[in-house]
Amino acid sequence: MRSRRFDREFYTLVFTVAGPVLVQNVITNFVNLLDNIMVGQIGTESMSGVAIVNQLLFVFNLCIFGGMAGPGIFAAQYAGKGDTAGLRSAARAKLYIAAGAVALFAAALWAGGSGLISLFLHEGQDDLDLAATLRYGRDYLNVMVWQMIPFAFSQVYSSTLRETGESMLPMKAGIAAVGVNLGLNYVLIFGKLGAPALGVTGAAIATLIARCVECAIVVVWSHRHAQRAPFARGLYRTLRVPRALVKQIAVMGTPLLLNEVLWSAGMATLNQCYSVRGLEVVSSTNIVSTVSNLFFCAFLAMGVTTSIILGQLLGSGQPERAVTAQRKLTVFTVVMNAAVGALMALLAPLVPDIYNTTDTVKALAAQMLLVNAAMMPFNAYVNVAYFTLRAGGKTVITFLFDSGFIWCICVPLAFVLSRFTAMPILPLYICVQAVELVKCLVGAALVRRRSWVNNLVRDI
Figure 1 (cartoon, rainbow, N blue to C red):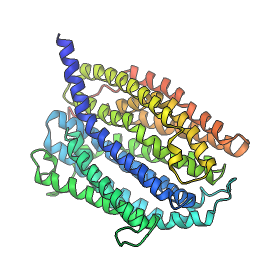
Figure 2: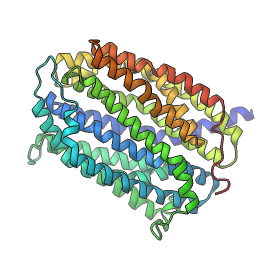
Figure 3: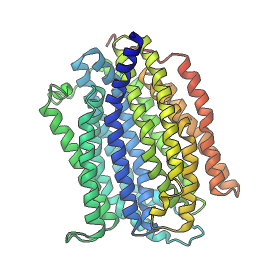
Figure 4: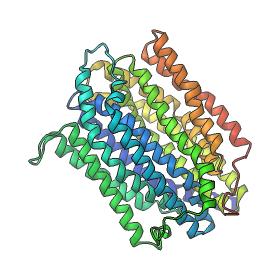
């Protein structure tokens, strides 16, 4: 009876943490899908230009997530320990990291945006306009650079709220933001309600305003409800972070930050390798990533949940409960995502038809979606393994496991196959995706060693 009661309590906790994150991610990615379709109504070139810029911004987004991850490990364990001062210091560290990332990426994108976009532009069989694609991408980027500021700032607050167990507010802020984004996209892209038709620039303006709304909600709420967001009380009274914590974050957080930057850059490089087969492939991979991200929400939410639950159990001095929880989280995540993958496979032939693009792009996108659906349970397992290792502070191992794998295995494979063979894009894509099976075996071995079972805040 005791075991059954614990299971019920455990899965209640899982749904309490994962539910709001999952809902927010599903809504956000569903609206992204609608945005993508709306931009695609302008033409394949506009959709491709926006897709390329979003590949570049994806590197920034994951840099922010990676930057929040290092202090977040300590924030989750401080929350489990009940140490409000430590939690506040971890939040301050996030502010410094966010400001540095925004400054660095804004400078890089303003200076070299056109050159980076051009790397993805190659002739294909449908004779698409590369110059127009570059122009659309540049117009979109000029506005999207500004949304990095509210995005980074809101992530400081949202991630810290989740680490303290307050997942509902970030979800509500995200829902409000995507509602604003969707409504403004309709108005500004197509020129409705008396507004000018701004096309891709309108889509970027809508995103900027939505990011500002999301940021305002989480910041204002946190400071007005300091009893539920204890890190917000006195957050700016000083910007000092204890030297011991800075050192710990630097040691454990730097590999995580580098990992997210290098992993996302690796994904962008993979897409650049795919783009050698023509601009149609850029449009196809844009559809595939947008649609797949909607289905990937399930295991991504479970990754965040794994990190938070295991971090709190480890920080509160319950290592055996953490080990048991990890096993249950792994099984639950893989089974759930096998079901989600089956649903994705059923819808894969239908979804690309929603887009206003060529038959070549639609057919290729449907085939790639089937590949992603088949790989989903394996991706889910790898994701849980990654967040398990990260929760216990094994950041160097996670760096090698994630970024090391993509740059040492996936990127060289894609580069060689795309540049030195005539292999068509679909078998090339399958070969690159299939190496994830090797990563599953590596992840299983690392988790089984239990080197991640660490209380990091005992002596801080």
